Length: 155
Image (cartoon, rainbow, N blue to C red; front, side, top):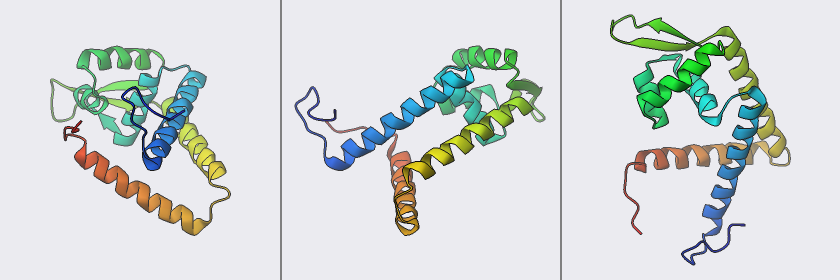
């Protein structure tokens, strides 16, 4: 599945494993979105608002790497589904804040609970000490990848 790519390169074992893990997470997110009656982008938007507590459409667009027009379309649908509300921004009359409705709070809690159960199930044969080490390694890798995200890849 993760053998040679179109350039003829074979990814190293860590890269191939990381890619397989990311693809599995993508499939899970798509399944959750479908079960929730949302698109993947809508689910991401709900998750970003949940993480922020409240967020402006402009900041949501930046965090999702989308145009404000795309986020407006997504937020319109989420408002119609009664998952988001728009509130006046307390410090900027020209802006507004997107916040979750109680229904969306319940949805995100269920999604996070399901994810934790999925991870616990997948790690059932891994010792607590190894889980802690893996967690620390993943956090360190995520921090480095995030810090390097704006760097160009040398081909």
